[in-house]
Length: 237
Length: 223
Image 1 (cartoon, rainbow over the protein chains, first blue to last red):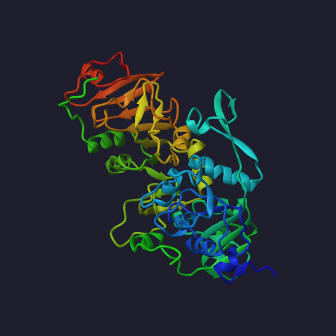
Image 2: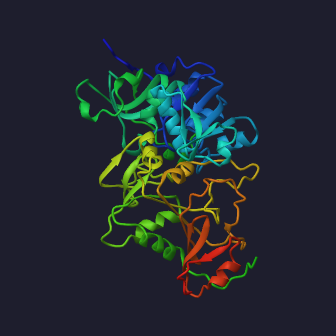
Image 3: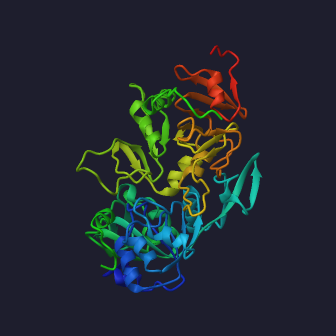
């Protein structure tokens, strides 16, 4: 029998090892798997490379993971946001690495990684500092820059509804990087608000097919990052 | 460079209105964060425009009423928005397929500098200690069919933002099609800047005096 459901966020992240590359879903707080990130803080794996669009806000979620000095390198498109001080402070001190990637290139590198495409050419960033040192090629008269697919050891993803096969549905713009990150990690770990029985999700409506998911944990009342920040909360609580 | 000016030209609302007039019925449009967002409020009646926000929504609606905000329904500026009837959600690779694949008709962006050849600098001043952040700007200018820039003609200290060559790091080279400022509307055609429209009381000579880049007149220009 296939059952990808685990019973705690601690069980879900137990296998994450020092030095792992981890994709973390979310665009700002929308889609950020805050309970899985907090479980990873409790678990303590270090020297992580994190692939995520932003670097977290306040002192909870991804920002708290960085503040706990578990992240050695961020791969992202927009590392500063309102209320983000943790990453900027460490970056200015030279204590965390940054690989800055245009947002669409980041998405396509993740998609390509998941699809078994090692590299691709894109017009984004040509003639800019972000293309310096990268291979380029003229195709049909236009210059393109070579970008490599990204694969990760783990992905931490948030969704709305899942089943024990790992089929997933997301919520509104919280979908963002979730579906592509699920495809690009050896072990995809998902927190979902609801777990349904197989068959209860209309097959026509499945967004992430279960084959891409390894572990699923129910977090029925996830924290809202913006509320935690408004209340000046810090993790660990 | 002349820095003193008594002519304010168009207000920001009037600039946004000018951009809106140039967006056709049926267009798929991506509006940048800040002033570009104002354009949506001025689309003439009778034109239907679909707004794309690159975090994964086609059919972005108005700002929600107080009490109806949903932190999982946001725009690229991470502000709460609504979805119109007929809207759809998608993941990031699909969203940038729309952008890079040339499916979005118009993108309206702010800028730090635009060069006379249509080079755009809008993501970094390159200052030491600044945290570099690019977001989707480079993908947008590389892939969207028509790029409009809306910005003040000069900086607050009077320096020209329309320059011979950008001194800030580029977002894209030769990507801007039209610039809307408080003083004029300029077209980039064949690596040259043509004055399309002047704000009230602004003359070509006055505009050139305030602009580092060389300006051209359309041959039938009677200003």
